[in-house]
Length: 463
Image 1 (cartoon, rainbow, N blue to C red):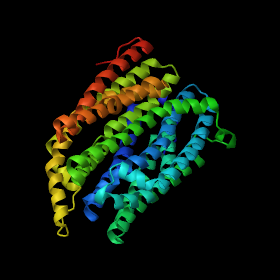
Image 2: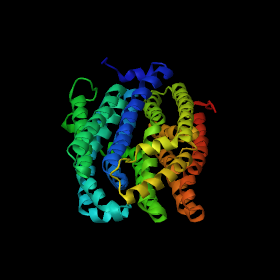
Image 3: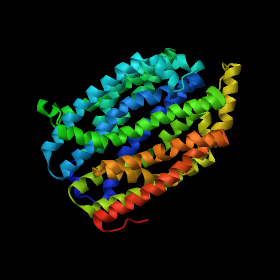
């Protein structure tokens, strides 16, 4: 693999850079999304649809703790990209060292109470009735591996900030392949059920951590830290915190949404509707991978060039990222709109071993999931404006607007809608909340993004 320098972020054409950054990021996200998708398919076919619902209950808790690492990674990476652009190597090293210290201390501190209060947390997130026991098994085992996942998420963002997206891609592929192979071995061959699904996930986190550690200890990384860099700096920690809080707040809102959605849907239709939402959630993770990849690829390009005061290149990166992502979003919408039933059937067990209750649950899922998918993905062609717009403010180090715009879609619009519309329209109210929130947040983000670009460069972005 050819050695890549971060300085290319400020010299190579934006189009080529976006391809170099976005394609590996997209592939990495695709593979990770396939991991979640195929993992759910394996669990659904080899264990049952209730097991999918059980994993869906656990995800917001484990993902929130892991998102602490992602928040520290993205917040610190914004600092690192701008520091490298400004040729401030000392600040980049201190930031990375502080990221490691914060990730270890915070995530381990979160896992302990997470295990102590397990019997209260699982029902609170919708793990009721038949869902509780398999959810508890999965939750307990996976939580032990979450600190390693957090370190992987943190380290992966730093690798991307160095301008080495291919290594970042590999870091995302390794745990996916490991998890799928272990799923087959532990669930299908050894018949370990939920225990097998949980251990496959946890061991895959350890594989990813081993690769991330190898990268930073080897010759490929520009960031060679020593013990002094691990000592927290008040200024650096504060900046990491303010920028990383944007990502953390977004994940916290996602966890709250899972809590609200699982409870509302359980009340409207029991375990079957919770399973429908689990399928919708997996599809959101899977088919949006190219849009998310473009957003991830855009971050280091915008951050580096902003730090180097190359504002025309920053504006160009915004324009090209949004246009490309919107086109991809349109293709995603068309795919979901025409064949939602095909995706739904992938998750369902269909052999002769199904009980009458399982057959009834599957029938409800098949009847309701396709319509839900169409509504949820209805605004996909424009959602890239919101994602990239919010990411732009994070890339340039403006935490407050980044936070507000990040929260606008799921916090300020979606949560109020999901609390109001189901009371008026029932189950349909749940699903139409998604596109309404997407449209409103896109309008708000486009306004503030356009204003900021004009203030910085004096040139209005393309509409």
